[in-house]
Amino acid sequence: MSRLEETASVVPRCPWDAGEGFLLLPGDGLILATGDGRISYFDHRAQQTVGKPEPFHCGDPLDLIWPELAEALEAHSNAISEGPLDTRLPCGAGVQTVRLFRSDGGIGIVLLANRDAPDNSSSDQQLLMHQSILRHVRDAVIVTTAEPVDPPGPVIVYANPAALRQTGYRAAELLGRSPRIFQGPLTDRDALFSFHQAMRHWQPTRQKVLNYRKNGSTFWVEIDIAPLADRDGWYTFWVSVQRECDSPARHAAGGPITG
Image (cartoon, rainbow, N blue to C red; front, side, top):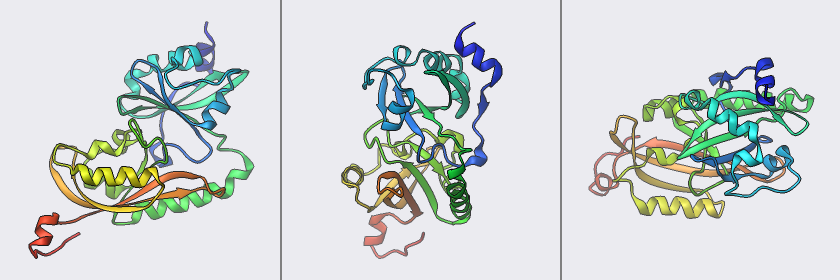
């Protein structure tokens, strides 16, 4: 019996709890990998948690860095396509809880920090309050990771009910994907370039773009994005507030503005 089988017999995989709201939180590690199992992005927390004697790099195969993780991704590939799931894997001398999810063109792995640590209680209460506020605001709100900015990121980690109604997606279909899922042939490339430049320089910006719903229909939306920093001043997320609006052409012609 492999170490993965031994661990799974004690702690089976379970679907991600949608009531938790966020796919990942500050303090969690993140690894993104291509469809053929090569690392395309990782953060410092992930490097620390995996704890290999030698640093790993983008392009390294997962099965050499963390064989049990590669085995779990293959075993749960069908389940991951339906939405994120949690499981525990051997990692170094211990066991690590991970959250597996589908990303743009590949898969993602969240290395979950200890949610039961005593110093997390205050942060958890604040998070619950923020989630309650976001669930009840009328504007669509989407939160992504701060990095990577380039594909396959940034990764959507939260979408409030208004965003789900606006786009027609379920939360499980959006989490782990990038906001490019809302883009299509008619989406203004100049506006997207402005977003990209602002994000590379950690600057807030506002743009009007034509987005696509899950059913393929289009809608104009005014999007405000801004970076969010943790208590140490490090940017950890981007927050996007989206309001439906009329097209710029209609506005220029003097038509009424809605939103």
